[in-house]
Image (cartoon, rainbow, N blue to C red; front, top):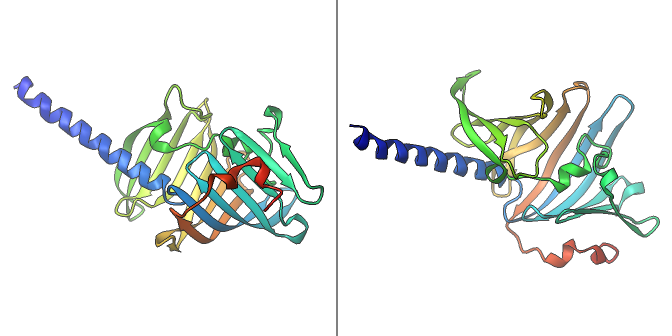
Length: 244
């Protein structure tokens, strides 16, 4: 009986793993795909200031990203380039390109609640974490799936674990919670305001709230999104920043 049951159990485990991988890849590709172009407004609220910045961004894979500020006028043309494990900032007023040092990586990116290190260590859930379904069923009247993700030993991530909650039928993310290595909640992402973006309905508003400052937040509001478009590698070179 054991010998007969073992192949069935193995097949079920493989099916569960395949399903989990497929769902996580769908979540990962919601805003990026193989390449992307987006126009986004970033709103930041802290104890000491609020700011609004409108920008456009391009990506290719998870190793290449470029952001260019459109508004406000005093910061128009400021760019952030991520290429592999390096980040550069271009300042149009002084026509200077600065490469961020290791000591600057934990600094705030554009005054937000994300760090420069977040950009460098952007992860893909399916590649960098081992995932298990920790809950599946109805919660608050909605069918959801909740994943617990723990980093793989060689993954370039700084978190102890992630909890990801998605809508069961569409795989749309609702909440993503990040825990530090001591398993204390560090920050929470929420996804709201479904709109047609990139050819399908996606959350247009992403908000991150730090656990130690619950009255603060950074919010990204998507105005436009195009996926899987032709994007040249030359766009993500340091030498191209001054030419744009």
